[in-house]
Length: 344
Image 1 (tube, rainbow, N blue to C red):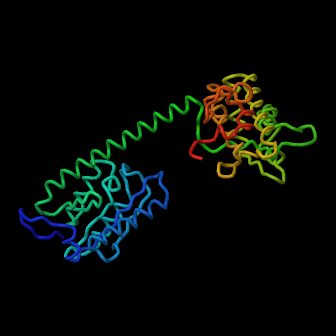
Image 2 (cartoon, one colour):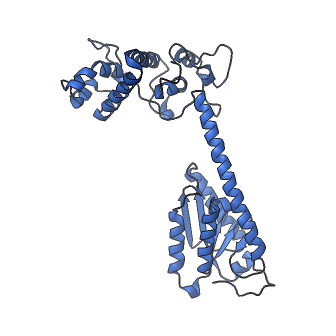
Image 3 (cartoon, rainbow, N blue to C red):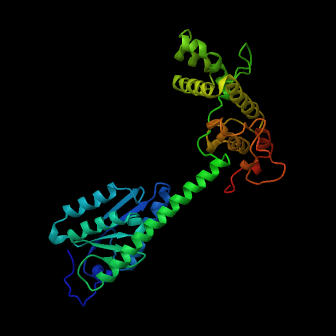
């Protein structure tokens, strides 16, 4: 319910605090932000509202980790359900967002949500801009204009961020700088004795393609045979590697597959050296393994568009460019600090 006013009287957020209004805290972090950010945003909002006169905690904290441009936001549904469950005569409520971008990054969506709140007799307060919206006070005309401008600016800014991000990604890919979880080399499964000694998992699968196609070799028994006490090798992964090798052969012939397998041989050879270790997930890799991942990831994802990293290399993958950088597996392993991201 709104404060009764005439066209000459403004309503302030401090007045609503004195008049017993309660507030709903709208906390939104983007999909790329962490939970700590959400906690900081929540504390800042509550502290700010306390300074404005609201001594009680919010009656509802609607928190969500989602893009502000997303059409369907569960957070908004929770807020609306809470408001509608409050008897209209007792509906002395304010929805509070830290800034317009936390409220919405979509102009139409933001105005739609605001209109829904107004129809329910609920104020909207944008904390950092000190904008109180809805109701009939004299401030509403200018506040509404500022709110709509900020929504439009937020949407434009998000579009610019997206374009810049896509441009940066395209430029990085041109240089062979891909991201993603490193592919497992299955170095622990490489035999150290017998007829299969020294052969990579991928090479052994490629040598068995004929039997797999003729059904003289079967997926599950082969996966079990490739496993050992140090690591299991699963049928689903065997199928994925089989299909990958068949695709490479279909596009580039046996010669291309042999090149691809030779790259894996070089990776495994380097991983078996002391102080290097396997490609097991970014958080657990050594610096040398990270550097090897950096110079090989593009080729392994697309061996037709990038130079082989075992013999040719791509100098552009180096973080610190010097005349003697080659972008090969050997150079990355020997000079890992020159290939690690600057953020480190």
